[in-house]
Image 1 (cartoon, helix red, strand yellow):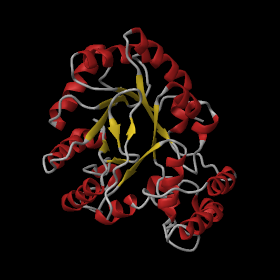
Image 2 (cartoon, one colour):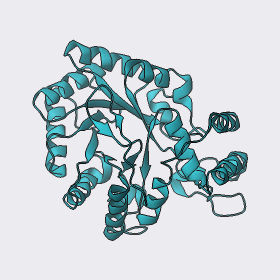
Image 3 (spheres, one colour):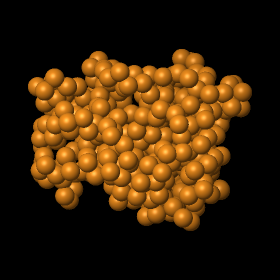
Length: 326
C-alpha cells in the first residue's frame, strides 16, 4: 500500500489535512452503529492502523457520538501512533449548551476526553436554538483565544448560517474554516443552494459526511439481494432499483481505472469537486478499500457522466430538512 502524501489546507489556516478524512462515529457508538456486535475494539484498532499507515491524518468525531465514548476511544488510539494527526470534534447544542459558558465547558469536556489540547478543529454540530449562531461563534472565538482550539467550523450549516457565522467571526479577526454537510452523488444539494460556491469563494473547506449515501453507493444493495436495514432503508426496493444505473456507471468507471470499486469511484467524485469526504471504517478491510479512492483521478468526461446519471435520482435523507439544507 502506497502512503498518501498529498495534503490540502483547512480553510485559511496553516493546518494541512489529507484529501479524505476518517469519520469515527462507529468507533464506540452502540446505539446507531452496533459497536460490540458488528465490530469490536480490535477491529477499530486494526482500521485505525491501516488509516494511519495509508497517510490519512484527519479524524472527525463529536461529543455526542456514544455520548462522549467515541472521543475516549479515539484518545486511546491516538496514543498508539507517533504521527502528527489532525483531530476535529463537534459540540451538539441541545439540551445543555444554552450559554456561552456552557459551550466553553463543552469544549473543555472534549479536550478532557480526547486528552488533546488544543483541538485542531471544533465545530458547532447543529445550528439549533436557543443560542444564536452569533453567540456560538463568539463562544468558540473565546475558546480560540484561550488556546483551546486551533480552528472554528460549522456542521449542517445552510447558506444563511454560514454568512452569519463568518460575519460574527470576522468581528473578532477570525474566519469560519469549514462547514460539514451531507454531500454525495445521491445528495448534491450543496452544489445547487450556493454552499459549495460560497465555500470556494470565501476559502471555507467543505467537508462531506455520508459521501457513500449511507452505504447505497457501495454497490452491495441490489433489488434481488441484500437490502438496507433500520435507518438505512430509506426508499425500499424501488429506491434500490432507481440507483442501479448509477451503480453500473460507477462500476464501469472503476474498471477503466484498474478495477476500482463503486465506493472508491463515488469518493473520488466527491474529491473531484474540491470537497473533503469523511468516510467511516469499522475494520481493516473497509479502511483498506477507502484508501483505494486516492492516488488517481476520474476524468472530466467521467465526472459529467456521473453528474448526469445522479441528477435523476436524488434521494431525501432523514434529518436534512431540519436545517434547511434542501
